[in-house]
Length: 294
Ligand SMILES: Nc1nc2c(ncn2[C@@H]2O[C@H](COP(=O)(O)OP(=O)(O)OP(=O)(O)O)[C@@H](O)[C@H]2O)c(=O)[nH]1
Ligand SMILES: [Mg+2]
Image (cartoon, rainbow, N blue to C red; front, side, top):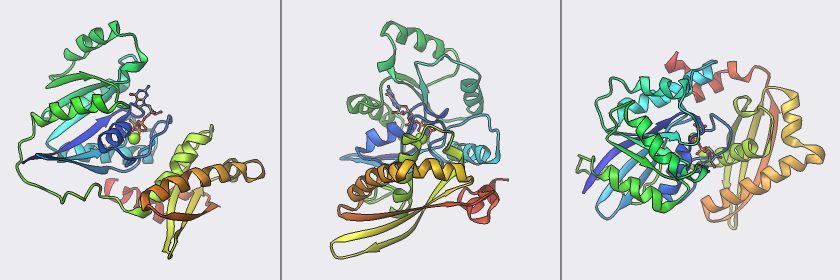
């Protein structure tokens, strides 16, 4: 038995959460085209006949402009120090820039294997791949550089094979049926937040929080209440939409995900509430761990 802890780190929007989901074959972390989708470190535990790898998906590392940004970064930094191996994901279709340097600087004094994943090769011409590998190999002493597309299972299988080379523990940390550290309340709220991020065009990511208020198991169905908190009345209008069409769409699609989670019929109730200066409130501060980070 080989095992170990592996953190998936990188800039926002490079595909870290998509990578975790493909490895785990299920939706552990929510995904969207907007930066800073992931707000919490999320564990996904990969099991096969001779290996257990505890993956940690982390919020994207970026130059923080506000205290939420700082709290997101500090979760990623915490995980860097806490694991055996790092998987650094970059978007190969983007030019190397100051944001990438900012992340590499964080790895300067790290004495553990770092595997570089050059993600989204489906977006670039093949001949560019070698050039990118060349560019990155001079920037840091990566143990491996793997160009791939994390939306493809065959590609993430290659990554698993490489990670196995660097696993040093021989302890089974978790039971075979334990796949994540998050509970149903967390996932229900996250699925709703994912739909909001994906269906609305506005700058909503930082200004919304979803909280599962209630999960009531019934005989044939489970009733789930999710509260969507926004800071401004106009965001509430966007989320509800014309004639309530947006909130209906958000509800229908997140209900499907929550039903898949429970394997049971779900009645989902969504509530939208405007709380001005929500980010100054106690509940929010505790949720994002500011109290510990600042
Ligand atoms: N074309 C392509 N798109 C991808 C690939 N992997 C991820 N994406 C897209 O990239 C976007 C960001 O993906 P996420 O997995 O949310 O990225 P992330 O790194 O977790 O982002 P944060 O949580 O904000 O730090 C989504 O729109 C994904 O569908 C890939 O291999 N190819
Ligand atoms: Mg993410």
